[in-house]
Length: 622
Ligand SMILES: Cc1ncc(C[n+]2csc(CCOP(=O)(O)OP(=O)(O)O)c2C)c(N)n1
Image (cartoon, rainbow, N blue to C red; front, side):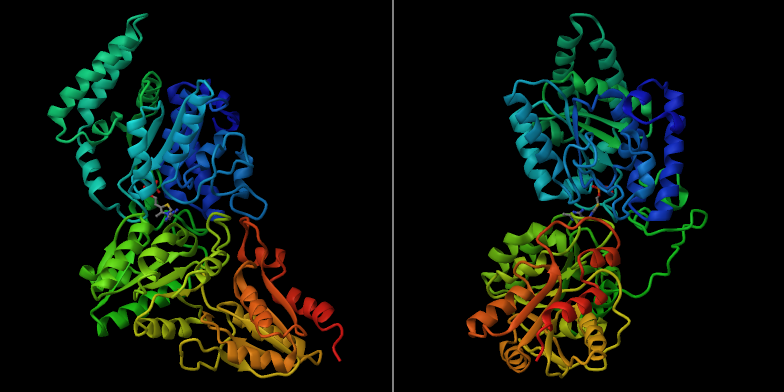
């Protein structure tokens, strides 16, 4: 089947049995690709039938669809002209792991961060209505993504607006870990109403086919249905806020899905279709471990075992140290926005269940709640990936920094993350945190320094940001570990020709660069900046006054990071005779690819920096 299918029109020619066969082949193909390239496996295996049904019933040359998070679009990509290209998934210059409007005319909106789809789809539907056009607009959102504030804000607006659009709620009872929250409790009540609604849909479908009178009757039935349902389902939340609720429907039954989707087209108000799916469907190992296979690196299909041995990483070091500190200090609490495993909090959640809070995919709420806990004497530690901290920016400013609250904001996956691409690269955090008054910003050079910084932060009684990268520490071992003191940098190597200022993971690179240029007679001083804010102006100034040449190295954007801070320092101190070069990522969104490839592409690798120093910065060395 798969061989014959390239675009939705090919799919539309198939009967149900053929579509079922196609679904199995697509599963096998996705399994093969993801086991090689890594990616979001379980979520994609769960939406195979749903995606087939969507492309069978709708015509996405004119109709539009927005996929929430977008991590579940591999099937959509296969069915919309990207079947062969899927083999390049998440590779440099290959197709992306998320929808990209510049990749296909079938991708209508870029996603990557959770809970944006309903807003975007409502925007499209309102634009359609203002232009007096006529096509369907859909949003596909998971039960996890529905816990995000933006999704709830949009639901509130859609239902009230009466705009014709359809929300597909893909309910697999999982976020990355099992889903949590009051809405999840509501959904679990609705899940059990399967039999009643199924016959109801079939009845409606039949009535609507009666020429001329079919549609008006469907409207009457809807009114009746609402009153009957009120009797059966205690609280019809979705109907009460303005939606026609259809379902729940078996998300692996293509025929039923097609029926319910066809029915939804005839309803002129907002529709919510509740689809029940199984994460990891069809691959037993993923069905049993949906969280592990939510996002995976390359693995062996037979055993499910990772192809690469996973070493210790920063998240684990953070999590272990936090457990140790929490044993000594009972005020420490940990908050996660649905990323317990990813951020290294699994152990903490087991050791201190009452001091651990998974609050759903709700970064804004996480930081707002942390502020409340801090004001009443707890020490909240909130590890969130760098790119998802963007969501909680105002909470950091308004709720935490402005009140100078002792909240420890751990920025995981800071810098380039690699294959997840532009929505997930953590290149902006130093720039946006640096703007905020009262916030202390640190970045460790290695695991040990992360532990020391965490301990320091617990005792500081101020808002603290600690940023650290995805993965492990550099092979370069640091002998020196000076005690962390507020606003103090650490001189790792003295020298007279050039000052190398580096922060976080780039400190190891700075050391290697110093060693290499030494072979060419350049004696560099290497400073581990440690504090982006407050900057150790004295130590840095003294070094630059001596060398008159400085480079900065950071794994963030060139705007408003370490490089900018040092340029400001030079101007403020009238040091115009100093030569400076800042090595950072350009003012761009950085595409997907491996970390090494991207570093090379933007000339942040050791060899390129060494060449650059020798060719330009030290050209007129006296
Ligand atoms: C703002 C934000 N926070 C966290 C994430 C990380 N994340 C990606 S998918 C996901 C779970 C999504 O669950 P759900 O919407 O139910 O989809 P499923 O994978 O179960 O199909 C999370 C937490 C994200 N993409 N965006």
